[in-house]
Image (tube, rainbow, N blue to C red; front, side):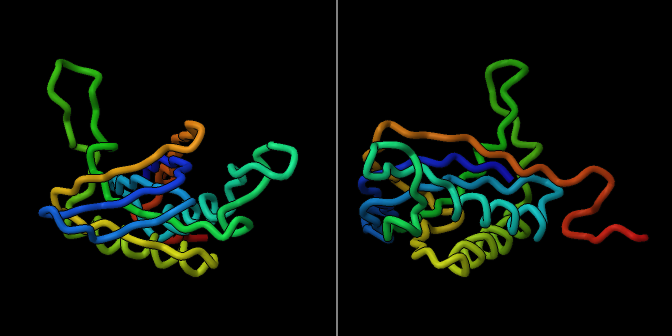
Length: 159
């Protein structure tokens, strides 16, 4: 699972010209589900982003989380983050999970973030979306939660 995390003063998503989601101060998350991802990646990613201390405290230091500031998340599925651009000029999306498997895991990730006590707005999975944001800082981070080697997607290891 790959995430692009952007601290925003506001963000919105439109589909076919209609606004489907909006947040004020918070975090815009662009999320790619990759082949082999499962519950373990979704859970690790949700815990991590919910606890990220990327908002300024009284001294101006990044010391507060979105929970501390009362901010919200806007989660947008973006399979293009899984692109491989190492060869040629056309992106390869071989590492992106099939939509039929990616959508439920994206939804699960969003639910897990909500369980961390954060309000979550969502884009529309698979839709052509227009994402508008004001990056606050700018502050942007890249996170990756690859499947553990030797394990199938979401499977537990045998003793």
